[in-house]
Amino acid sequence: MEHKSFEDEDITGLMNEHFVNIKVDREERPDIDNIFMKAVVAMTGQGGWPMSVFLTPEGQPFYDGTYFPPEPHYRMPSFREVLLSVERVWREDRQKILESGEQITQHLQKLDVKRGSASALDPSVLQEAAMQLAQAYDWKHGGWGGAPKFPQPMAIEFLLRQATRGDRMALDIALHALKAMAQGGMYDVVGGGFARYSVDDDWLVPHFEKMLYDKAQLALAYLHAYLITDDEEFRRVCEATLDFVLREMTHTEGGFYSSLDADSEGEEGKFYVWNLEEIQAIITNPEDATLFLAAYGVTQGGNFKGHSILQRGLGDLLIVEAFGIPLEQVPERLAKLHAQLLERRSARVRPGTDNKVLVSWNGLMLTAFAEAGRYLQRPDYTQAAARNADFLLTALHLEDRLLRTWREGKAPYNAYLEDYAALILGLLALYQSDPDRRWFNDAVELAEGIITHFRDPDGGFFDTRADHRGAALPSQGCPG
Image 1 (tube, rainbow, N blue to C red):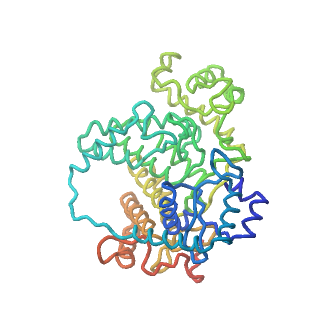
Image 2 (cartoon, rainbow, N blue to C red):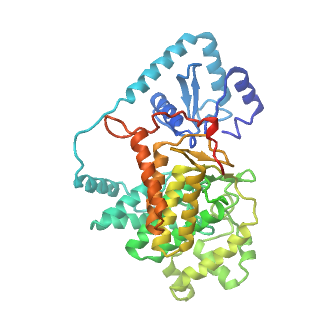
């Protein structure tokens, strides 16, 4: 929508003539996103992004939607038509809009009334949740739900924990899901790391955007699966994912970037796909080329717009049968060929990087590096975790206040509950890997800050501090 609508001169002309236009980064201001997403769901029955909300001058929503195309498409009005229609109603029947905005505001306020429960949690709840996940599981393709299919690392982590309590079915589901995703497509077998989701049912065609929080949670899921099973495949995926973050998503001072775009050179996925001739030119050894093309089912026609997204077609055992090589040599041989493709791919035009550093997402990745450093005996991972923690505690922690986001030396927004919680968990994980008392002491200080500034006297915690202002005061600019 940014490229097709907001860069269209006719559309932006209408926007600038009739509206005050405010673009919100939902990752920097989740509080604003949460308020207006509730409005979108209330008015349309569903949510999503990009989110377009029309407000009265007092900030009350009266019309909204998610994606509006630049031209009418499948019964969807164009964004131009939406703008003209809203402007006309505002001019001709403004009172109707004001009344609608007031009604929606009152509805949203009712939704915020707390609905507490006095019932205690029982272990049977965990068993019931595992059973529901089992009943909804896709045994053919792996994962849950249809396209677009998301990886669901939190569900997998829950099942792995159930497995440690003796639930064999939970273990089978978790391992099946992890193996299905690791075959490639949504997982980048060449460079490591996962795309945000798959646009199809079998994880082949990803939405090529790479998000930091996905990689943090998935790296931990594969690490924990390795610790339970001792299966080297899970370790390889975990390490390749973390190595990718170190290589392509890490600031020189230790912060982790938020994401990589899906597009490069104006084309989604161009950076990641291959054609037959290109692979044959890179892998010059005929036997290696034949093995690689068979392993990934690469053909002249490809599987994605005339190109190939790499996804394993032959498993290791079938490769052993077809090529007569020892089973233990298959991963090593393929890894060397991946490295050759990665070197060539590094010369391509890279997707754009969202270089803001978000504390909550960094806290997740801090945990992943700290745990992986400890359990895989990778001191470089522990060092990366320590550098990240030091950066967050220096550039985004001002006196008694944690800040939300950092970019190029500026940290303009106050942190939210999720930022405090994620950083605390990351620091505790790091303290177990690197017993520097600083990590523990800072975790305690942040936890005390939650109790002091976020606690609800009636129980639970608010998402924002009691003195939350959204943006930090000008004097709260941080070094970096």
